[in-house]
Image 1: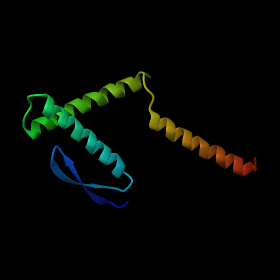
Image 2: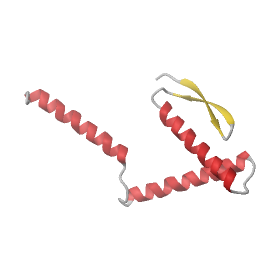
Image 3: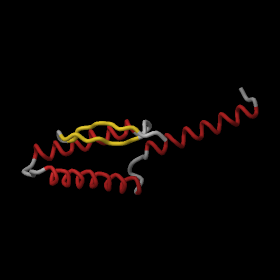
Image 4: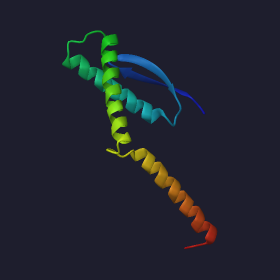
Amino acid sequence: MTTKQIEVSILGQPYRLACSPETEAALLEAVARVDAEMSKIRSGSNVRGQDRIAVMAALSLASELLKLQASVRHGESFPAEEIRRTMHSMNEQLGAVIQQYGVQ
């Protein structure tokens, strides 16, 4: 697996991050989410100092994640990516069976 360096900015601070080409899009999405959360906290509260803003953003994002995980456990939301992977796998299996038996 190859690794590349990307430059990002979070709350105006530059960071150099390592990632694989396959995970770059997801990492950039995560960076944008963290930057947005930190910007929201900085502009909407009395919290000052990047370390405190980062902690408040981490707590907010962790809270969202825990709520989502609880809702998935209770069947209140659908894990879309898992459903997509399962459907893709099933389609591949069906394609292999169709090809094996020459069904058109």
